[in-house]
Image (cartoon, rainbow, N blue to C red; front, side):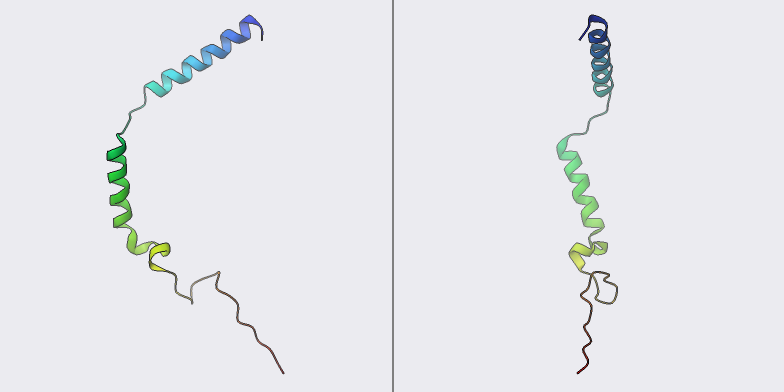
Length: 68
């Protein structure tokens, strides 16, 4: 790597680090509490928790018709 390309690469790194340093951070405990609250508020609409009715389930097994 030549000297000028190394300087350009380092300037990009510094710019990215400055951008990341300026971001507002949230404590993990606050983020977890918010996520828990969201999950509890939306649990009644979550198909993984409540299940899917067989009439609206697009992945239900197809019925097999056989004629004798």
